[in-house]
Image (tube, rainbow, N blue to C red):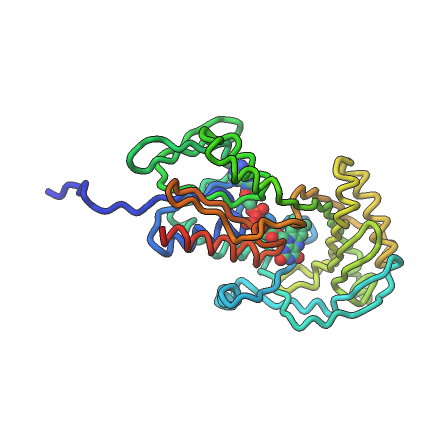
Length: 357
Ligand SMILES: Cc1cc2nc3c(=O)[nH]c(=O)nc-3n(C[C@H](O)[C@H](O)[C@H](O)COP(=O)(O)OP(=O)(O)OC[C@H]3O[C@@H](n4cnc5c(N)ncnc54)[C@H](O)[C@@H]3O)c2cc1C
């Protein structure tokens, strides 16, 4: 008779908190290296700020709009999955003045990458092996951590699901892959918060600007003879006092053809209007959108999203934090900058540190 061997080596088990680009990169790298991982995320889906929202008229990338790839490791990761990532010819990325006049066409040599069919698809595709092994705990908010005196697997993770508290035990290490403020909160609310006072202070120096985002659909532009409304360009950086960026979602590869625009308010305007309600923000941004694009038709669909943490303005200045003796690490885009690639590099660097430990 076969009895389970108690002497079999157990794979180290790592809890990864956050299923955005940084967390999934870290989790997948550890998984490939033979670690057991459990990824917790408070949201229903994967991707974090690489987000896609559906509407009756097609989807919107209401978080990150596209990304660039400069580091060889990220270029390799992106180009290895041509099924998931396509080049987006933004068909001249323009710079606009306050009145919406094109002041320069930015012929950027760098590729603009967009996952298909939506921004969240990349992280989701990469995470397929984790999904297949039941390693994802979604709709599970992590509220605190506890380092016990157990000789092995000392970490406990405190969670909340549908308002119900829970405790998941038996981790060798924990990785926090959330925006700096949220990682800081979890460290502060943890049993041994005094042990992490230095990190809490370091994370407190990181600053991240908010962003109000507007989503508009114009199905009337699909009428015969009317292929698109408004400008000939598909994406633009704007100096309008309310708007910093606009893009025609329907111009991206693998998307629905119905005319749809995503508009990002400037950091300053977003901060000034952080506590306004959606209706007020939508009205002001719709007006600015009409001024910039010349599109005065009424949209059939209007939606908005307030991102509290959008663009890092003061990064940590190092790729990650890792305490090998305790087995606790922190990563995220804000360690290095404000881009998707920064999140990837941060998650990868932390995973390699965990593997080496
Ligand atoms: C409006 C906007 C526009 C952007 N535009 C671009 C762009 O054009 N190009 C570009 O390169 N980058 C852009 N970015 C930045 C890019 O989205 C980020 O750099 C990147 O997605 C960050 O990944 P991350 O894994 O570090 O964090 P996140 O994606 O934020 O992932 C963190 C995850 O942690 C989860 N979480 C938080 N708290 C808890 C908790 N307590 N318990 C469990 N889970 C928790 C969240 O649900 C989330 O899924 C943009 C961001 C925004 C918001």
